[in-house]
Image 1 (spheres, rainbow, N blue to C red):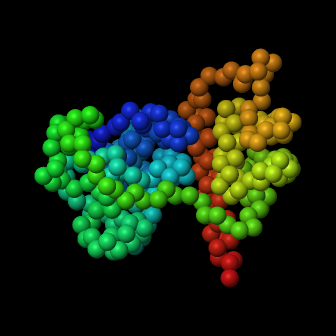
Image 2: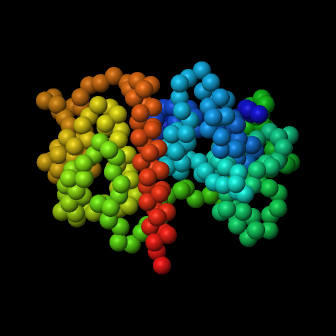
Image 3: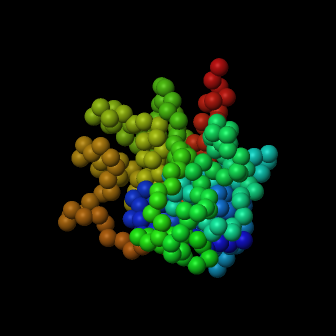
Length: 285
């Protein structure tokens, strides 16, 4: 069942969210309406597509992968049931007081937090609960306080941590699985360049760099050319090749097919990285 939710102006100026494609950003806002009062919903990409993109040729699975990669959602499984937790949902949403409590189990980190503090409400730590302090003007059907009006009492929230790739000692970026469009020779040149300028690539940085190269390719810019020009100019980060006027090549907005290709490439890269991490953990003594 869809629910009315609140959207703040900061949604459109969030630089982290801007790293996601437009379809992923729209999907993120749509997930709020599908989530219960704890910010949880079932991880059913086909069902989510039917609810949010029924009139568009958009695949939801790559969008969910992208949102998880940047820490906006957490995908987890409890007793064989695939679920999604919207990160910091309680910080930005005030569900209606009559909305029923969540019936979906929380992620493991929230379950541990509730056990530690002795709570047994079925809500995430810091989740808003209706009470006498809930006063002021509300947005119809959502119970959300309109900004700059009503009750201004801050609600303390123990926010769940954003998902980040774990640091691993002895990480070698040359051991990562590469997308098909990138040669090992070009990737090695970039890794050695970063070492030469005393800015070795970290595990998190390597994943984001490969994603950036995937974006360049979706925009019609050759990834190896990006690497060569960035090395030639002694840049620390990858920059798109510049034309004679010193600006990036002019290009219109990406088409729907290009966005889908980019999302699928990101999803494939993320899945390969996840398998590689799983294999490395199995090999550890």
